[in-house]
Image (tube, rainbow, N blue to C red; front, top):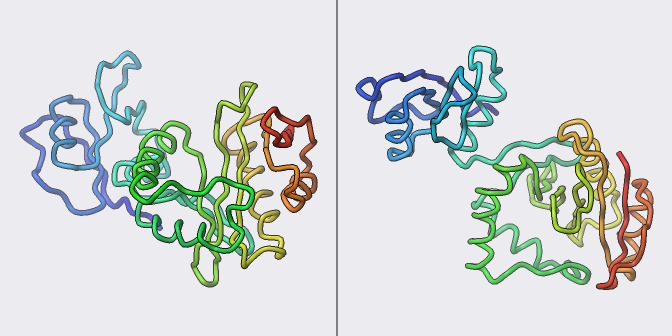
Length: 248
């Protein structure tokens, strides 16, 4: 689904309207226009033909006439806080988290046995702040992170999975794979299906060269999954977790 409907270039503040139709992205080479758009909450991106431009904006685009609609759509969604659709598999679709998903996330983590081998969520208000910062700083910086997994038929949240650059990563081009599937959907091959697609994305879309994964040594299901995905056990960490690696 495309949310972006109109792209407008505005060069001068006097030409900027106080409100535009929903789905409008303003492009400007004027700092005054950019600042006013930000004040109004109007999605905006700076553009310049000079890579030494001093314009201040979250998004600065070069050679805008050569940019395809995919990029503009992505910028618009980032400005509006609309989650990006990542990919889909035979039975699921993968997308970014949005703040409207918070209650569903707590419901997922409240299912039996979900936190046997992983950290629980923070208390509600702290988790709310954490996720808001995650959207603002992790998604915007890396364009990847932990995502939500939905059942295509029911449209219900059934898990989380994704890749993150964390302090556990020891090489350039490396990220950590994480995953969890709702306990009432265990044993259906969903984690393998989703993680296989994420590994493909890590290589082909994000240009990563290796992935690591960590799990409790007693978590036989996750260890079996990682081995099925092609990960190799490197060693046991000081905290007791198994550390796996996959060259992609």
